[in-house]
Length: 149
Image 1: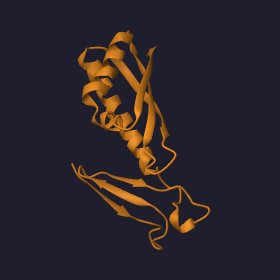
Image 2: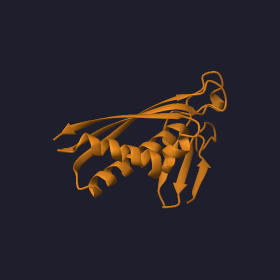
Image 3: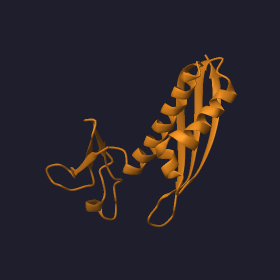
Image 4: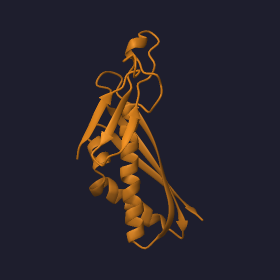
């Protein structure tokens, strides 16, 4: 797996903290830093997600992928899955994630809560590389609800 990240700054002025990533699969995405009122040259322009937001989103996408796949393989009529992630960070550098909660909302027809609970556990214990890596510095908790459609 590979990825190339290039500083865009403010493009013409090369100021700011914008970056563009090109993934090995040929996709691009933008990242930017938060504006810094005290030192504008060190801040971003708030034009794209922060890199750590993308890290959190990647973990959410990884685990949601697993949960949906596990439920589908179990022949459950799952029609939707969302994960709301909330994270806390260390107060000093490096400001790693110290706690992450993932709240899953699974929709479908007669999807058993036990199957959702099992799918989440399998993702976090065995399959989701992103959340397993983040679990090295953060305590990860999960919760879920099942909505009938």
